[in-house]
Length: 72
Image (tube, rainbow, N blue to C red):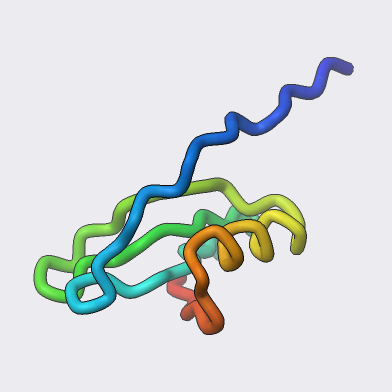
């Protein structure tokens, strides 16, 4: 089986005044995607797929996040 490494990109900044960190979770298959939700429009900006707890920690560290809310 050929496993691909996740593409490493430098983190983009986010505006704490207009966006909040969110972990979008699928009820059906358990897929989790980390990103930012615009507080005014509700638009979600996808950043990375979360497969392991290490992925989530990497996302939190890259953007200096201590809390992240889950949305289903």
